[in-house]
Image 1 (cartoon, rainbow, N blue to C red):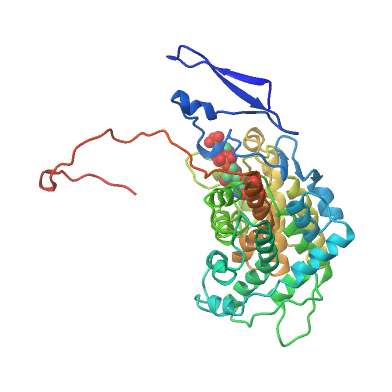
Image 2 (image 1 turned 30 degrees about the vertical axis):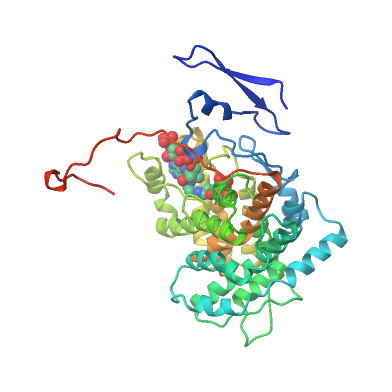
Amino acid sequence: MTDKKATLTVDGLDESIELPVYSGTLGPDVIDVTALTGKGYFTYDPGFMSTASCDSAITYIDGGKGILLHRGYAIDDLAEKSNYLETCYLLLHGELPSKAEYDEFVEIITTHSMVNESISRFIKGFNYDAHPMAMMCGVVGALSAFYHDSLDINNPRHRIISAHRLIAKIPTIAAMCYKHSKGEPFMYPQNNMSYSENFLHMMFGTPCSAPDVNPVLARAMDKIFLLHADHEQNASTSTVRLAGSSGANPFACIAAGIATLWGPAHGGANEAVLNMLEHIGDVSNIDKFVAKAKDKDDPFRLMGFGHRVYKNFDPRAKVMKETCDEVLTELGITDDPLLNIAKRLEEIALSDEYFIEKKLYPNVDFYSGIIMKAIGIPTDMFTVIFATGRTVGWIAHWHEMITQGYRIGRPRQLYTGEVKRDLTPIDSRKSHETSF
Ligand code: SDX
């Protein structure tokens, strides 16, 4: 327990309220406010700017210093020395695997990468022009209809089977959504390929030609998945935890995370970055758009800039920028117009007083889209790629919550509506202006 405490005095209360203060291994202490309800108060924190929703040992972020640790390992170390599946094992189990553990994990994921053949018919039921994220939400949410033999969330064996199935099958489903939108045949995963090589094969391979994946692009894809793997209690991970706290099955919880990630303020930002760069069109237009981003009366924001937690460089953006240069060099793209706009935009924003004062730096989404575009991935698939990489993080948090013991998440509110009133008969009611 703790010997630290916070003492709260409230106007109108005779006695002050003592609240326990807890310390973690890193980061700010937290004040336990659960006693406030018994004193007739709620805390008030819209957007959860100052709220720790749980204990977690998975990922630590120091936004001021631009530090991101997964189970204590720095993201740039993992990006340089590890790979996506090894990082998945680390996030799920808390330690890097031994060689034998790694080989067994890769074998399990590889041999579970096919999906039930009925899912092919499920995806073919969508219009060809359905947004891939709409298909992902639908298909992942429906996976419990296909894999209902391991849905007891209190059974550790069921939890790990569902975790393996989701990590193994999400890239296959993602590639199938893309192929459906292209009107091309689905490609089956190849067991002799690595995770990211397999994904690019399922995306761009065809039955008419032998598999041919560029190893530099496969390594870049692996880094993109790794850099997106987890990020503490972000909006989509918090959604997965909240859905999981009701006892919902893991596939439904992950589908809720996918739906949340889709928003342009969150994982949809990578798609929005590319659309923004294409809308800017030329470096000569940058100043006009930077001015729009600074104008309080203009809803335009520089997509790919700013972060709730990072008030310094997002460490993932630095690695993403290096990967971007590697991919463009490998592909012989030396003068990419969108990359030129992105680099000039970054220079201008980082020297502009508004962005400096508000601590707005490029985030993980700023360069990822340029890499994916160079690889040949269409813009509407960018958030699908993000969801594919983030699935392991969502599962790790879902699993941590269940094994820690949990209660259903049920926030309260500051009520600002009408006090009790009686119904007026309809013939006596006046019309009102309504807005929605
Ligand atoms: C991700 O949480 C995570 O960890 C998410 C993520 C993950 O891995 O899960 O890291 C992934 O979602 C990255 C963020 C991707 N989103 C974008 O790039 C969209 C553009 N960025 C913003 O919309 C914004 O910066 C957020 C949503 C990311 C953060 O919003 P906050 O913390 O609520 O900050 P805010 O909106 O209150 O902004 C603070 C100030 C405001 O000005 P004032 O009202 O104080 O005068 O900064 C301004 C904002 O107007 N501002 C921007 C801006 N972002 C914030 N101004 C111009 N351009 C921007 N991009």
